[in-house]
Amino acid sequence: MKLYTVPTANGQRASVALEECGLDYAVRQIDFQKGEHRSEEVLALNPLGRLPILAGDNGDDPQPVIYGSMAIARWAAAETGRLLPAPGKLAAMEHWIGVVMTDLSPAFASQFHLSFLAPERDEWALGYYAETIHRVLAVIDAHLGDNEYFLGNDYSLADVLTYPSAVSSIGRLDGGLEPYPAIRRWRDQVGERPAVVKGMAASGSLY
Ligand SMILES: N[C@@H](CCC(=O)N[C@@H](CS)C(=O)NCC(=O)O)C(=O)O
Image (cartoon, rainbow, N blue to C red; front, side, top):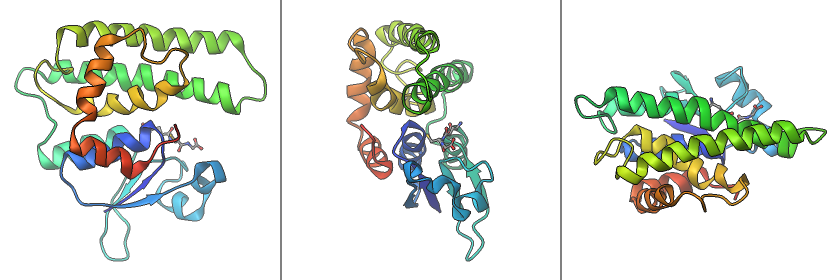
């Protein structure tokens, strides 16, 4: 398999999940700041021109292809049986994955586009997304204050999908994780896992 990746939280989620699941993969870094995500090589795999992408290795045929950090992580977990919840904890895992992937991560992405790519600075929109990020982080902080991981004592996909936001995307938030001691404790603990160290290095980091 080959992981087409980027040095952002989305790329990191994919590579950390592959590492945690013990899967073998080669890495192809795509420089989206140079526009490589619009190259024929990438568009042939994903017409959306977005990353990360995991391409299978069937000789010359790059299929099957999975696009998106959550899809790649879910596939890796289902394929290997790792990072999955213990009986009775599926609802909680889906809840937290939803919070992170459909609330927190899009708010960080919008903040990135408004901060670095928008032709004009929109203070209202920037304030809105910063407030949304803080609202989500405060809820996660309260939860991790009472729980070692998202699912109590069980490390799962929810931790893997959240960790890159808490070390990468967070660099764009004034004050970072300073107001969130429980997330800082969890981040340090997760960050010591060898698979997390390896997965983060595989995608690299902008910050
Ligand atoms: N939902 C996707 C989002 C992927 C995404 O936003 N990728 C960005 C890099 S972090 C990208 O490829 N941007 C290029 C573009 O939008 O043209 C995921 O979770 O992986």
